[in-house]
Length: 167
Image (cartoon, rainbow, N blue to C red; front, top):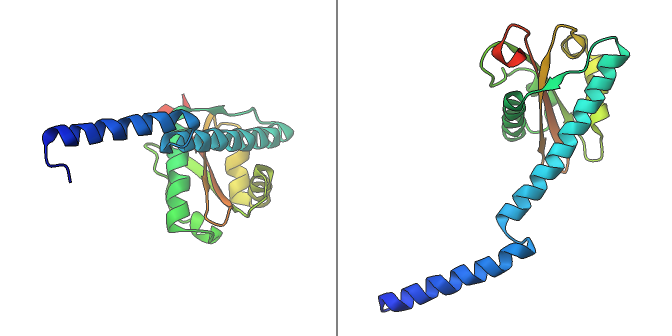
């Protein structure tokens, strides 16, 4: 315990310099957060490409990704990771955290499964298929959350044409 204010100031200055020196090496929490965000965006983009490929194959136009819907879908995927875990049946029983009308699909992917697997599941389920292929849907948001076992929870929210997010 420093006995004088000057000792405390010297300690804090030393600590600050030590942390500043480690930061550029990528050992900071911020560095890990940036890496996780970059990986998450790559997974969200892969899911968007897979969903758009399915829409094009069935005669629907690709969806426009909206930042607000992405944020809501990302929040929802993290929420499901905590509350539902890998119980995929629980995924379809909660409303999405989006203002205004919206529809959504969710899937739990095992470690090693690709986003195309989620889209294949949605196409196999009549209700999910209808949401994914609806030609009137103008916009989407995508969220991906990693589970402790290495799997992922993916969520795609679809804006209604009449909602502010859909314009």
